[in-house]
Length: 137
Image 1 (cartoon, rainbow, N blue to C red):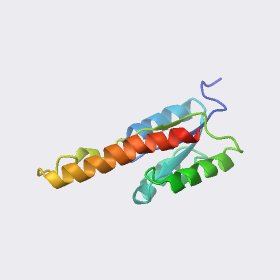
Image 2 (image 1 turned 120 degrees about the vertical axis):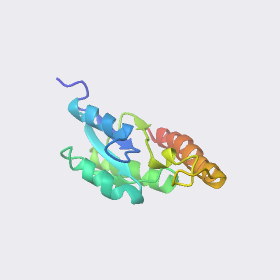
Image 3 (image 1 turned 30 degrees about the vertical axis):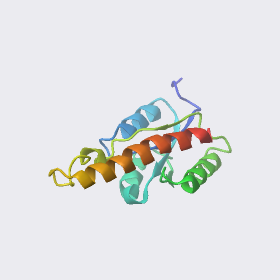
C-alpha cells in the first residue's frame, strides 16, 4: 500500500516544473495522495498544465495574500475532497521573483526592486501566507 494512500493534500506555491512544490506534488502522487493545486492568476496556465500530468488533480485560484481567496480555496478543497479538509497545509515556493530579488529583473542591481519585492514575496507571501493557510486546518 502506498504511504499516502487515502490522504488529501492541497499544495500551494507551484510555479513551474522546476519548483519545489512541483517535485513534492509528484512525490505525493507517486505515494497515492489525492492532490489539488492552488495558483495565482498570473501562474494559472503553468499550474493547470502541470496538474494535467497528474490525473484527477483539480486547480483552485488562491493568492495567499488574500484572506478571502484562502477561505474560498479551503472551502473548494473541502468540496473536492468530499467535505474533508486536507490533513496538512504546507506552502513551498520557488517563485521566479526570488531570483530577481536583488535586481531590477534584468540582472542589474536595484534598491527599489530589493525593498518592494522582498517585502511582498517574503513577508506577505511566505510568512503571512503560511500562517493564514495553516490556520485553516
